[in-house]
Amino acid sequence: MQHVVVVGAQWGDEGKGKVVDLLAQKLRYVVRFQGGNNAGHTLVVNGKKTVLHLVPSGMLQEGSVNVIGNGVVIDPEVLVHELAMLEKSGVAVTPARLVVSTEAHVILPWHKALDLAREAAAGERKIGTTGRGIGPAYEDKVGRRGLRMADLLDPAALAAHVAEHLPGHNRRLVEWFGAEPLDAASILAELAPLAARLRPFARSTVRLLHEAGARGDGILFEGAQGTFLDVDHGTYPFVTSSNTVAGGACAGSGVGPTTIGAVVGIAKAYCTRVGSGPFPTELTDATGERLRAIGHEFGATTGRPRRCGWFDAAMVRHAVMVNGLTALALTKLDVLSGMPTLQICTGYVGLDDVPAGAAALDAVQPIYEEMAGWEASLAGVQDFAALPPEARAYVARIEALVGVPIALVGTGAGRDEVIVRGAPFA
Image 1 (tube, helix red, strand yellow):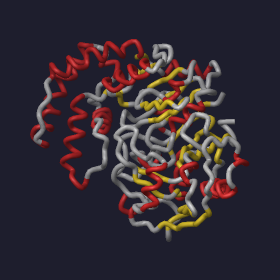
Image 2 (cartoon, rainbow, N blue to C red):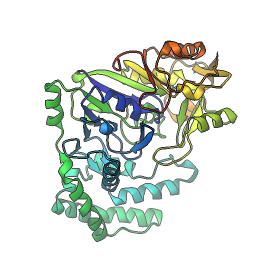
Image 3 (spheres, helix red, strand yellow):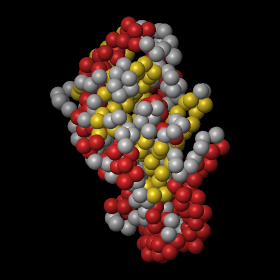
Image 4 (tube, helix red, strand yellow):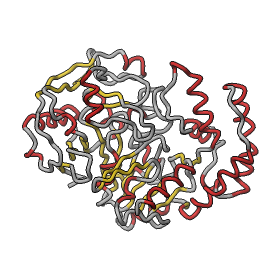
C-alpha cells in the first residue's frame, strides 16, 4: 500500500480528522508530523464526537498504530489529559497503539506564559495565536535551546535544562511584559508525573516507520492547520510556526520523500478562517452568519467563531502546486443546501496567482462566478448520482478550477456520510 499525506488546502479546519479516520481503515500507521495542540481534529463516530489535539486521528480505528512524530511540539499536560479522555471513552491506549517520538520537542510552562504575554502586548497587531506556547516552543527548537521528549524523561537532563534556561525566560516575562516569573521547583514538580505517564509511549520512530514500510504497511501522514498557515507558504505573518504543507511530512517523521505515493488536500465547499489575517472571500453579512451557524463553525481548540466566506479556487489552485496534490477531498457540501445561489472565486483581478504577503492578499479583488444552489438535504448521501444536479455541477466546477480530481465528497459529519469517487479512498 502506498504512503499517503493528508493536508489542509485552505486555512485549516477543513475536516482532516474525518478524512484521516477514513483512510486509517486502509493504512495501518497514522503519523502526525507537525504542529501542536493548537489544532483540533473532530471525529464523529456512531453519533459520538471526539476532539483530538495531539493524538493522531487514526486512534479510533482498531488495529491502527498512531505516531506523534518528531516535527510535533508536545504539551505533556495536554497529551496526558487526552490519553485519559480516550481511555474513559473506551479506546485502548497502549504503547502498541500509540508511539511518541523521543525527538519531538516539548512545550514548557514558560512557552505558554510568553505566548500569552506577547499576544496581549501586541494589541491590534496580534496574530490571533491560540496562546498554547506553540510559537515560542518552535523558536527554542530552531534556536537550539529546546527540550526534547528524551530529555523530559531524564530527570537530570530536565533539571539542568530548567536551571539553564528559566532565568532568561523569566527576565523576558518580567522586564519586557511585566508578567510574573516562574518557579523552577514548581515546574519540575509539575512535569515529573507527566513524564512518568508518557515514558512507556516514547521511542525513536524512524526505524519503526522504516520497518513498517518495508513490511508493506501503509503509512498515513496527518498534517495540522492548513496550507495558508504554513510559515513559509502561508499568509505571513498570520501563520503558524511550522511547515504545514506536504513536504513537512518527511522532515517531521523521518520518512523519505520517495516513499510517498499520494497527497490528498482537504477543502471545505466554502472557506473559513480563525484569527487575524487576510481573507479575500470573507462574508460579513447574513450569508456568512448562516454558514457559521449551519456548519457549526467554531474552533475545536479555542471555541472561537470562524470567519466564513465563499470557496476560493485561486487559493486551492496554489495549494495544489505547493503540496503536489494528487486528489482533493471536498467536505461539508451539505452545509450549502438551501442557498438559492452560490459564488465561487475563480481568481483575482489582474493577478495570475495568490500574492505573497498579507497586505497584498488583503488588497485583492476576487472574481466571482455565480452558480445555482439547491434545496434538498444532502445528509447521508453516498452516491454522487443521487445529488441534486446543481450540487453535482458545483463539485464539477470546483474540480475543473483547481485542476485535480475530487476523490471524496462530504455530505455530513458522520464517518459514513461521504461519497467516494476515486483513489486513494476507493
